[in-house]
Amino acid sequence: MQEVAGNGLLDRRLFLKTGFGIGAATLLAPVVMKNLEAAPEAAPVNTASPPWMHTPGAGYSTYGMPSKFEDDVVRFPSANSAIPGNGVSWTPLHLLEGTITPNGLHYERHHNGVPQINPSQHRLLIHGLVKNPSFFSIENLLRYPLRSRICFVECGGNSNAGWNKSPIRSEAGYFHGLVSCSEWTGIPLPVLLDEVKPTKKAHWLIAEGADAFAMQMSIPLEKAMDDAMLALYQNGERIRPENGYPLRLILPGWEGVMNVKWLRRLKLTDCPVMARNETSRYTELLPDGKARMFTMVMQAKSLITSPSANMLLREAGLYQITGLAWSGRGKITRVDVTADGGNTWAEAELQEPVLSKSFTRFRIPWQWNGSPATLQSRATDESGYVQPQRKDLVAERGRHGFFHYNAIVSWQIDEFGSVSHVYDKDEIAESSDPVDIDAGWD
Ligand SMILES: Nc1nc2c(c(=O)[nH]1)N[C@H]1C(S)=C(S)[C@@H](COP(=O)(O)O)O[C@H]1N2
Ligand SMILES: [Mo]
Image 1 (cartoon, helix red, strand yellow):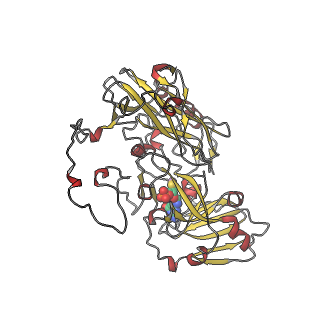
Image 2 (cartoon, rainbow, N blue to C red):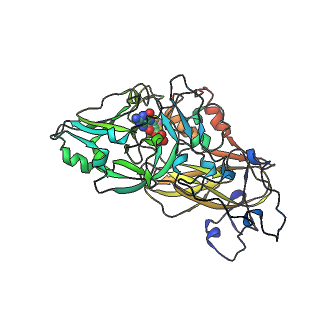
Image 3 (spheres, rainbow, N blue to C red):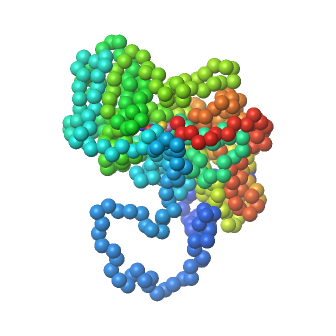
């Protein structure tokens, strides 16, 4: 097996071949350290039938749940905030596979809790600079021809612990998991805008949620007419209350905060409303003294989910490095992986389907020789944008960053096989003006 880059990275096509002895016998998998005690001993070969073959199994259920042996695959909720219902819960990206996030594990971000909305009492009002202001009931909306699309939703504050002066110790998902990917089904927003007929002066939509926060965000009309959607379904079932039941705005590739949940109102205006989340938050001072605002698009990002922080490689040998890449500008065109901290890189395999503004799964085989290694992944998207090194991101954005952290992530494997999150030495030097992110989820 020929190395294609330093420190044991192998050709991505290795896993696509058959008959080369790449099977369970040769391939190793890291274990989550927390589960080490529960990790199975090499089970003795048992020719007798297992106990669950001796009596009939459980009966039917109205709504299926995961196996009880998977009860560690859960979201990680933030500590209680002084503001009721303000906080987040992270998706366990490091414990999931494929590209679709199960509904019960979609990350959550609420400013004031989850409203329990009775759909028969919910209305969407579209008004303002329009010729035909209209109310729509959920029943009405469900009669429109529906469309589905897969896309990620990512909080602009995702991964913000990356701005900290020292690396956070959390598992990959509990650091980067304010992003999830679902198939959303609903009505393309241009269909309804066509009915209400915006006037020539209309350039923005103010979207308002029916939660106790009465969240408001300004959406450029251009985006609304491009690929915005009023979603009613999430992965085939009605949207979960946490994610906006019964109606949410989906703006593919744009920061989570603009994807207003529990949507009750769209007001067409000539200018943005300058709400809290586009002024006091989501406005960031740059090193040159200017501030950036309306940073809507989520830039390309990637992350190795296995092996990742707080996992253990129990022995040297052949491993499958895998992770996720996504970009708010379109498709991921390439993911490169390094096993020697960035000295040499090899191109990973992108698993089909590679969809625009969606999670893309990448994989590459790696022969770990048992000595220390640093793994990183670097995404490139179809606009040509390349995911930045942490030191370059810090240099560009300064030390007042809170949002849009998308730097390359480093996982270091020590000689015992334990994996931890690290910064490069020159990154630490760049961070000498320490800023630590405290609780604040925007
Ligand atoms: N009405 C309303 N919409 C909202 C929010 C909210 O608190 N209220 N939070 C926003 C933020 S900051 C994010 S990141 C996403 C989170 O969506 P999710 O909880 O479905 O993951 O919803 C956005 N839409
Ligand atoms: Mo967010």
